[in-house]
Amino acid sequence: MTDRKLWSYQDIAAHIEVQPDTVRSYRKHGLLPPPDAVRHGKPYWYEDTVHAWIASRPSNRGR
Image (cartoon, rainbow, N blue to C red; front, top):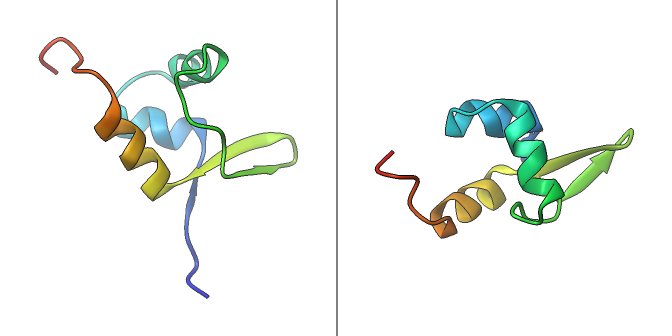
């Protein structure tokens, strides 16, 4: 089995260059896909889930 890294709010935020609270807000408003795993009450996403979500997002004002 391949060891797939799970991304936290902080990992996603660093990747898309926003604050972790912004990513939490995306989830709260249903803009982030459901987590792939929850550990100790914290959500995590696989890298491929995050990249698919990024690809599906509308343009960020020329970012």
